[in-house]
Image: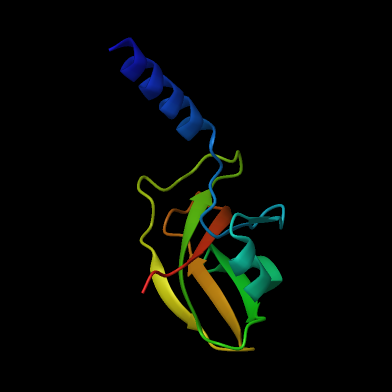
Length: 129
């Protein structure tokens, strides 16, 4: 019993310390790109990260170019934050699907529904077929 309890505690500690390795995270405010998946990171080039205003609400835009000859099936979702860096979404948004064709440039964008949303973070991962 003592061995099982020790194993469970160690497993929880290791899981809690593990970094998110699912794809890419793009921060709209700092323009930092965090690569959790080196393969996906080598296949997608982040060209531009911007925030504009549409009807008084923030719109996040990220332009990507495929550095890969085949088609990339990706999932992405935006998260929105206020000026203090607190998330304004009550629930995480849905994952959306996109196909980035070989050597193609695409724009992923979203307008925040919450008027307090001013900053965004975009998560991208490869879709499992």
